[in-house]
Structures are given as C-alpha cells and as structure tokens.
Amino acid sequence: MPKVIIQIPCLNEAESLPVTVRALPRSLPGVDEVEFLVIDDGSEDDTVEVARRLGVDHIVRFPQHQGLARAFSAGVDAALKLGADIIVNTDADNQYEADDIPALIQPILAGKADMVIGDRSPSSVEHFSPLKRWLQFYGSWAVRGLSGTRVPDATSGFRALDRRAALRLNVVSDFTYTLETVVQAGKKQIAVDHVPVRTRRTRPSRLFQSIPTYLRKSFVTLVRIYSLYEPIRVFWTIGGTMVIAGLALGVRFVVYNFLYGPQGLIQSLILAASLTIIGVQTILMGLIADLIAANRSLIEDTLLRVRKLELRLGEKPDLEPGYQKAEPAEPEGGDRDAASR
Image 1 (tube, helix red, strand yellow):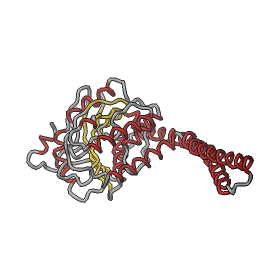
Image 2 (tube, helix red, strand yellow):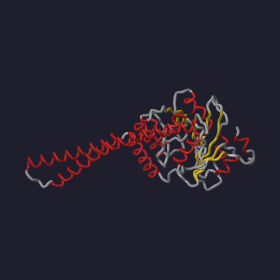
Image 3 (spheres, one colour):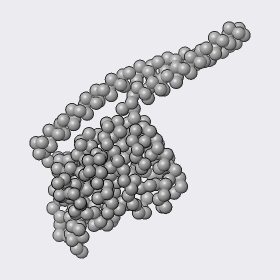
C-alpha cells in the first residue's frame, strides 16, 4: 500500500494554517499511510509553532524567504526521502477543498498518470474577475501548446505527483513551480492527467503584487523553460526571421538600384546586413544551446541516479534547509483530535 505525504508551503500562515490542516484527511482509500509536511518559507509569525500544535508530522524550515518554487522543491525532496509514494501539494490558505484529495490521487493509484493537476475550471469560478478568467484561459492555452499536454488549469497548485514524476522534475525558477513543472512533464514524457476540484474564496494571492508583474514573470518563466528543452526551435525561429528580413531588404536595395539607379537607400543596406549577420549568429547560438541542452539532459540523468541512490541508502532529509521531525507540543483547544481526523 502506498504512502502519501501532503505538503503545504507556508509563508506567514499562522492564522490560516489551522483551518487547512484540520480539513486534511488522515486516511485515504487505497493508501496505507498519510503524513503532513509543512514547508516554512522564512515566516516571521508563529507558523512553525502552530504547525507543531496541529500535529503536523514533518517541518522543513528556511531561515529566510526563498520563494514558492524553492519551497515546493524542498518539500518534494524531503517527501521523497521520507518514503512518499505519492506527494500531494496544497495551499496553506485553504483555497482547495481537501475532500477532493481522493479524486486527485485516484489516476495515480490506477496507474493512469504520474502527475495529476486539480482543474478549478477558472472560467466558471465566480470570485475570479473577468480579467483573471481571461488570463487563466489563455495562459493555460499557451502552456498546453508549449508542453504538449492537455492541462486545462496550468496554474493550479493543487496537484499530486507519484515517486517517478517527483524524481524527474527539476524546478529552476524561483518564482512559481506550476507552469514550469507542466512544461517539463510534457517534454519528459511524464503522464499528466487532470481532475475537477472545488475551490473557495480566500485572501488575495501573495505570489505577485500586480497582474502586470505576474504576466511578466510568467512569460519569462515559460520562455526560459521552453528554451531549455527546445533551443533549436526557439533560436532558429528568431534567427531565421531576422535572416529573411535582412535578405528581403537586401533584395529591395538591389532591385531599386537596378531599376531606378542609385536611390540613396544605404540605410536599408546597412539594416539588411545587420539583420542577416545577427540572424546567422542567432542560428549558431541555437546550435550551441542545443549542445548545452544535450549536456543538461545528461546531468539530469545523473541527478536522477544520485537521487535514487540516496533513497536506496535510506538517506534522511538534510538539516539544511532545516528539516525537523515534528514533535508536536501539547495541543490547544483539541487541535490534536481535529488534526488526526
């Protein structure tokens, strides 16, 4: 029977964490063991103390704020070393309905998927603004195109990973893991599925300060991760476009001079030469980037073997970034009973 670890990245969640943890199940159909893991991302409040009082099994602490992506990665690494067969990620603000966890892990238990993403159906969520619905729809559409998956809600943080997927994913962004892991899963042939989940209105997101900031960072993340896996396509598209534009301007210069004599279009000639040279250089950069991508693939294979070796040797989570076997304090107001539901 598999072991499930439910991980909760936290940043100053002392107030909302009790509601979230109390709602989490301590038993699941088809699962032998369920444990809770809190990743404290440099909180300045009593998040860790609250987690202990609630009976959380494991805590990973960062001494200072590292960002959601790194908190997610640290949680996945700790969960693997703690023997998790399935890792469920949820938010600390109680946005997601914990009763949907059985449905979330079912495709993994059935052997149909390695990663399952909770579909919030953003277009029908009442508390999302029209702009946010539009952005969610087209953002997920872009991610589907880049990743080759059919995920309808790419930004959902409510997701489950089996051991195979967790070992193979390597988050390099320090902004958010949601988009990057979907693109990686598609490029690494990890089986991805989705199930409908329910959400509730919570406080505004702390991940970004404004929609333009979120769009800018998300765009940079997508371009960066896609370029890692498809450098030839990215660089050759850009370089080829510039070469064609340069050649077109060069042909225009020759034709005008042949038909009408010197026309003083020297600026066009300079621009044509510049575009052609830069385009060729970009294409060559694509070749170099492809070689680097091949080397990165070998490094990832080596990292996968190292991870598997660590797990075979029974390596426990490191004290860095601050793993602790949670020894819960005496609960206040019956928290222990509620947490063990």
